[in-house]
Length: 262
Image (cartoon, rainbow, N blue to C red; front, top):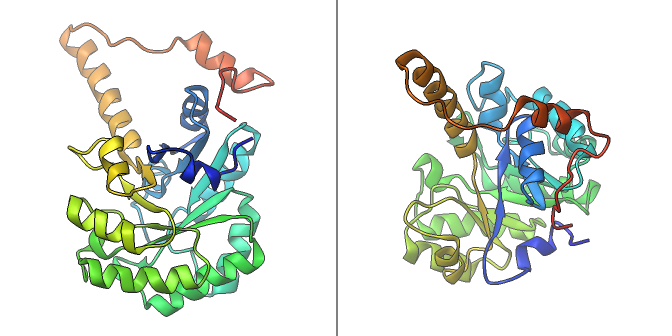
């Protein structure tokens, strides 16, 4: 079985991590053959009627990740900033998840945190759960604060020294900047999907992991609206997996029947 860490170093193409927001979306992604599935804090929060951030997804993420443990794929959890200021509380939460990996972002309430305090969270998680792949997220580009390579690398250096297994820089999209980040960061670089750049393009720039983030959730909401509009307007109804097939997935003692690459 390929470990979650090894997925970041398998071939020239970056490891693609699709993100789910509930059990059924994760089940469908696992059934499509993805060896690992991540959660999305935006999707998890929005599905319960809450905006992203503000530590709103703490309990929902805990319940979801525990429920996903029955799937034969690696699970990586998006835990915002760790849902606490105390590094030991963050480490205890991550241990309780039982996930193969976590994303922990270095911002709270849309403001960048002191990199030393974030590094302390990374170090605490690795002490308590050394087997968990900690993807330390640097929010410089995402928030538009200190959004340059030098500032981003300075933060990333703190997190790598603290034991981070990967660095996630959402919002970074310029090829030259991605190349510079990847060459200077000694652990796998993770980015979000970049319009106009394929996985192969990103791989050539040195990126080792691509996450879909909340894109699948947002696309699913759009698709649901289009179905309702098609019925209302007398247009052809889009094809979909049958009710019986979806029900069978949920009732099967082996929830994923297709090869998941593990």
